Length: 260
Figure 1 (cartoon, rainbow, N blue to C red):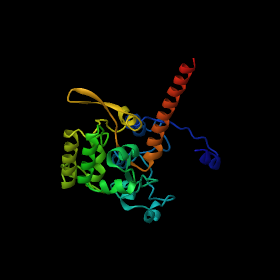
Figure 2 (figure 1 turned 90 degrees about the vertical axis):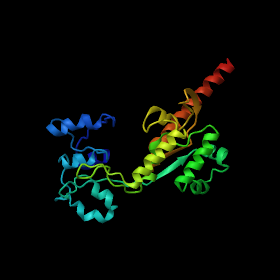
Figure 3 (figure 1 turned 180 degrees about the vertical axis):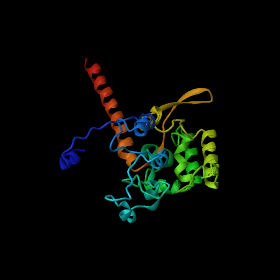
Figure 4 (figure 1 turned 135 degrees about the horizontal axis):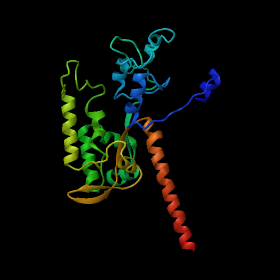
């Protein structure tokens, strides 16, 4: 923003809207044109709908001519921003691969190693993932925060849409497999029942959390999280820093009380 202001002699006003309220807060402004922002971001969950609604500029036209740089993009990312007429109206700045981030201390305790190459081999298949999950369970830990964590691996890299252009539900083999895997994760109690972006989801990254099992509340730790590359810097590191600050504060208070 600062660079843009300096180069163009304008003042940028930033408004941050929580993602849960983002579509409902922004859509009325876009529909009416009253108070609509000049630039706004879009999530994949509602991207196609907003592209076809005409909320964004046609970037295929001059002076943008974004089709000239299509070869610089992975095709499916470039195509995501196309409207029903094939014009590019939204463009992503990133394509982020995903990965499994795990707690090395738990890996060493349960699996006998914390080496990424060895852990990667253990979890190179769905069967392997479930074997590791069972070992974690035996030690009182949870493999993932919730069942949704495995959706990227069980549905393939570029899954078909759940609903086709005839408004019919499309259940591919990959989708059915995902539901079967998710059911097994839940039934065997391999997850902490902490949905993505929930308070318990964040807490599980840095400290033990409580879950209900068989009518009882038990304390457990989450072994691994599935995130894109930005998840390390924007989610995991921030949570770890927050928890480290809490621990440091507690230690300081303890030291003060002992000294007193």
